Image 1 (tube, rainbow over the protein chains, first blue to last red):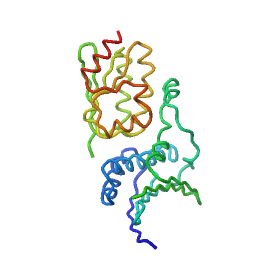
Image 2 (cartoon, rainbow over the protein chains, first blue to last red):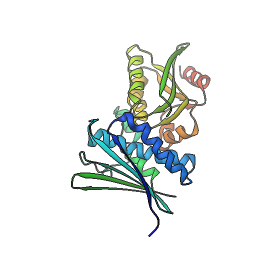
Image 3 (cartoon, helix red, strand yellow):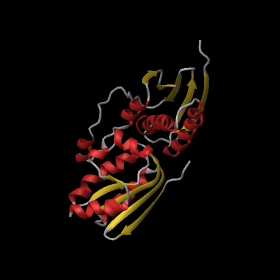
Image 4 (cartoon, chains in turn blue, green):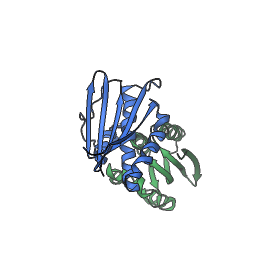
Length: 139
Length: 117
């Protein structure tokens, strides 16, 4: 078994916490040899995932919590985001059409696309009221 | 963490919005308020200076998406300038450069506005 080290934080489900989430990711991703650009991409993926939880799973209820953990093996960086809100499966989405959205004055819909663009794997599971989003990026 | 700030100023008949720091789901509503106010006061020629914008997430992009049609219907535009490569890459990945004017600087944005008149 490869050695696995892990760090985690719990944050209130508030958009105010997103900058702290990005800092948490930057602190660890940088140590694993990711470039500044790669670290930025991982930060974005996690920001989008947490924003989705705050918005869709918890409907901006700041009394709820998100658990964020980061772990790594010799070849992979793995990020898990766990919440107990409304299930939200990021597999159910279509590639957004920017022009169409602008015409309809719609916004959003790009979060999952960005997560999938920046991470090598994005998996979602729901068990006993816990939603877990697992994202992996190769080192 | 770089605190988000924005500043609105007038340059001739154009309004320039200078962005500083990180634009995410927490700070995007502040930019949204500025766009709503500009539109309410019929300022439709808007230049957004991204020189000091260090980060943008989809919530920030959504603000640009939500108001561009209305501004263009009134003969104006939202032109984006001075983007660093990290921020530009996000706009580029989602196809913004084909639908938005993303320009080198304020001078170039004004020149594009003037040539469209």
